[in-house]
Length: 253
Image (cartoon, rainbow, N blue to C red; front, side, top):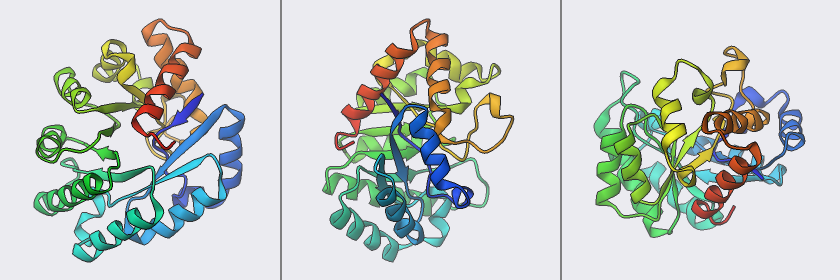
């Protein structure tokens, strides 16, 4: 079984051919696709997308790149959707200290409040942690939740071990397929396989063979095979273990 634990199938990049993209993913063996929202303005489109495609599961949350346009009223919307829709997770939420021009305090406020909502509704979270692993971990230690996934993990081995102890899986996808991504590939080799989940982040983070083109969930089997080759395992073993990890973390999948 293949589970894409992070795919923005509701993104505008798929408006022209979303049916074909979904069909190609199923044909490639992808059996579940987790679709995280990024802003309250897009929640309805996320719900429409997952409602149209039976293999898809939703998550609702405010992405840190949308923090500057969000406030308490948006958090009230998130709470309402979590209560009414009972999604698979709260996400995509977190911190981004890479993009300039974003207010760290505003990001942190929205992140903390959404962690509290995840705790209230006993839901896992899908975390955005770009250049912000330690600040994210600080809040996770402070606000105990049931776990989740650190999407597009790019931290250290020590940081990975803290996430694992807190009940989190680590998302690996297209970045792992580049020969120059030494640190990510070393993590993919040496971290416990039971801590790894597979993802595409489509349409973003395309694997090496797409040469910067649009990513799609149909690339997940080849990403899984890349992980298998790095670890010297069979593709079937990697797919089974990583899918089991996703099912354990996202219990309603």
